[in-house]
Amino acid sequence: MAAIAASHAVSHVQNIIQRLQLGDKRLLLAVSGGADSMALAYIASRAVGPRNCIAVTVDHGFRPESAHEAAAVGRYMQKLGIQHEIRRLKWEEVQKPPVQRLEEVARQRRYTEIGNVCQMYQVSAVLTGHHSGDQAETFLFRFIRHSGIHGLSGMSLQTALPFALPAADNKTPVIVRPLLDFDKRTLYSICKAGGIEWFEDASNSDPRFKRNMLRQIIREADDDDRSPFNASSLLKVRKAMQGHREVIDRGLASLLDKHATVRADLGVVELAAETDGQQLPRWASNPAVRERALASVVGWVNCKDHPPELAHLRQFEQLIVSFYKARKAGASIAQTPVSTAGVTMLPPTVRHGWLFCRQRPRANEIQITKDLALGATALWDGRLLICVQAKPGRSIPEAVTWRVYSQDAAMHKWADQLLEHRRVCRKTHRPADMHQAVLAVQPIISVKPVPDAQPTLAFAFGSVCAETLAATDLDISVRAVRGTDLVARN
Image (cartoon, rainbow, N blue to C red):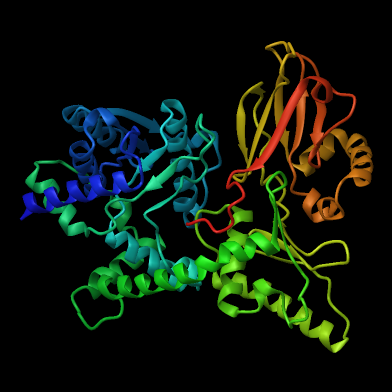
């Protein structure tokens, strides 16, 4: 039976690789050492050949035995003929988060390291061992967080790799989850039949982590066919939600093309406020479409790797609906912004529609980048890609470096220059682009011409500062890491 399951898995992965047009690409395998990822490596080596794979193991360094396990994974990869990288996280370089946020921060750092390996080898796709049990956990996790259709449709087969820089072709690497149709039991049997050693991470049973608690609930419910919490029941509902989402999404993309303005250089979205004689704007007239439109916009702005909670979307919806009710009744209209889910929504004025921008960061939430060389690209605040390079034909000393600051950090160094630059920008920029809430979340870039020199202000509020090295010799580009596609899969 295990041999048949393994053969079926190999054919299944081959079909997915061909369907996603990845057959001629080198693939990165995320291999933690657990049964699911070890089975993935075994299956992928037979589906596409070991020479077309690279494996990476991110050692979180939480357990004394983790380094030994990562080395053991390397030995098995060598046996398969797959090149292997180990990346160990160093927690002394950052403040270790409280246990409630440990999973979230560790996941972010893990994906950052995986993205770095993608950059090193110019890999465009990362295969993970997520299986149907993970899908059921994700559905239940999002259900108790009151996600809408967007979140309850679960993990997709392919999505953008979070916190990753684009490859040489200017495309962000993707995550591919080819084992979502297989359960954990099948992956265990493939490992046992193939003599594949795997490791059980004790932290996966730690009840302090919510996902582990949900995993236990599902595991106990699997013994009861009538339980709504068994994996089969959860996956049936998830599939139904996916179908609803796909129907809504078919018309949503064209609707947002007409009624949304995406400012990829600012990380801002503006939704049209005009109602065309109706009670609500076209994008907001149907409650289900309105929910998906807001989920898409909020997800694009905050760049989180999980959909917004339904409760957060309801806060935005409440203001939108009450705004138009008050206007129809001739009552006074509140112009108070709503900030939730890491996003601020600004009510429309005569100058702009509904504006969505990143919520103002907390003090020291966004760290100043280290000195970067010309030509480098930085992912700032997890949402904007910034590149500073010499203009064509310009000869710039190699010693020139640049940094990125938040507005609050930059104000401590260049308050007078920033205020003057903002005054100049108001004459040429759109009013919506100069709203204080928008300006507060824009990157400020400095340039240092030689190592011992003081950095000078070079770029702020979406434009290059006059009479600087940047104005004459440098190209500075800022763009959203998610491009301009609002209806992207999570």
